[in-house]
Amino acid sequence: MRVELKHAIKSSLTSRILPYTEVSAYSSYSFLNGGSSPESLVHRAVELGLSGLAITDHVGVYGLPKAYQVARDHPGFKLITGADISLAGDPWFSSIQVIAPTIRAYAGMCRVLTEWHSKHAQQSVAILSDWDRWCDDIPEFKSCLFFPQWESSPLQGRFQKKSPLWERLMSLKENLYWPISQVKDGFCANKLDWTQAVVRRFGVKAIAHQGVRYATLQDAESHRIKQTIATLKPYSEAWQELMWNRERRIKSPEEMARVFQNYPQVLQTTQEVGERCSFSMGDLRLQYPTEQVPEGMTSHEFLKKICYDRLPQRYPLGVPEKVRHVLQKELELVRTLNFEDY
Image (cartoon, rainbow, N blue to C red):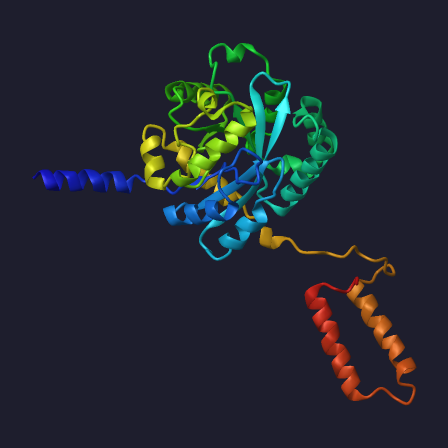
């Protein structure tokens, strides 16, 4: 009887396990902040059965090319493109993680990252006026998905402090998500209460994430050492102010289901985000700028006209049929590869 009951309970828990996409992960390309290589993160996510993984390195897409080299060998797995942008001057948020769901959004995100590096490389953070300018001047950027990173403490009285950034983000509400993690930092219950209050008051969707810093427990130690270097303190002192409970690893859908068993909606939202993301690093192609062509003609038509107009000059005694055949075949190849403007 006990065995049957145990099996029934296990079957019930298994049936409630939801697919999970991790929307926040720092690779070792986030200097002193990530403890695993991009390849290791993808390998571990695939091994644990995640539907997808977002690489959100600090103000850049440095780790994504190597992550893509691994992800493309797993057709059912979705690698999501993102970045973490540090901000200063807002009472609620320290940074915003941005995800590019389409190639258009990726173009906007890259413009923002380029501006950030050109103006804020020394101070390491952008300011609120920068965010306003990006949203006003770069329309592609507004099609990104936004995940504001909020402080875990203190939680009391935060509604009384006005957030200029939050007001701007609410104008992009359809692309805005409120991230929540449960990493045994002493604020788990408070985070749930705070998240539910935000959802009720502002009508935004909450989403689960782990703020991944390393792929496995074995990588946690190297992450600790990197964090110690960042604090400029001895290893024996740094642990007191840093989160060293090894919870910032990639977790399986089963483990995430246990963590958020009382709030499964936040796991469902990770799948929604995954489904919204159609952009892949494989979509990027080198494209030569379009040349000026006569009005009413395409680049291919103009190239074809030039070639056939010059044939009599090259073969004044008559154009061999074989030459015409080869030219036609090569023009079709050029059209297929979109190389007309070269």
